[in-house]
Image 1 (cartoon, rainbow, N blue to C red):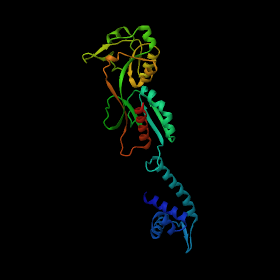
Image 2 (image 1 turned 180 degrees about the vertical axis):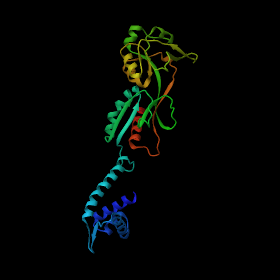
Image 3 (image 1 turned 90 degrees about the vertical axis):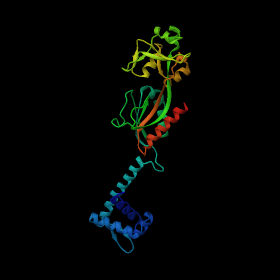
Length: 300
């Protein structure tokens, strides 16, 4: 506290306790120290706050008015400390801005949001799904979920998951068009692709006999800018797609999609991190969300 807030706290204690000695015991101060602080406050304000007698202290009219405002100010200071503090008894609270890719957000963040908010009801969860790389500072984002290599070394990161890519198709598509047995068979199949500029019209493979890696050109009549679009197109039976295994694992387990050419899977791994602006004291809501997501994804 600065000297004014200290004076306010002592003044409020004296008014409530009815004397310097009683207030001193509450504040762990001597009666003399309390008396000097009240005298200094009255000098600064230019008006007496108490009328003194040998038996009791009584608030003046100015003291009554001042006490009303002081109590409000001290309560607001306590509330401010409680809102952002991480001390004993503090709980996560406040708005938490989270950014994630569309695919990861749909399959991993949104299904867990109700449980997180049930655990931390004083947190206001603000989720944005985008495959663009957001600037955490400029966009006032607390946490971003990033897939792939991390470029900004100024950010703190916690690894959530390692995932590989898998080629999938719906059973209906395979029934109509047949099952590719080797990567070269893809030349006769409809392959669903991302429409990013950096995306090549080829998929990587590894020879199971020699271990050599190679690529095969692919083509198809549908494109999308995120995994959610390609997953839905694949589920509809339109064609094959190569997506992160985290995104389609449940579909494969349920038989809605089938993993294809797994013997030739190159096993390329992508890391998924939660990144955040690093501070020595991390906001409770940020730490709670990262711990929660890491725990739930780790178990799944």
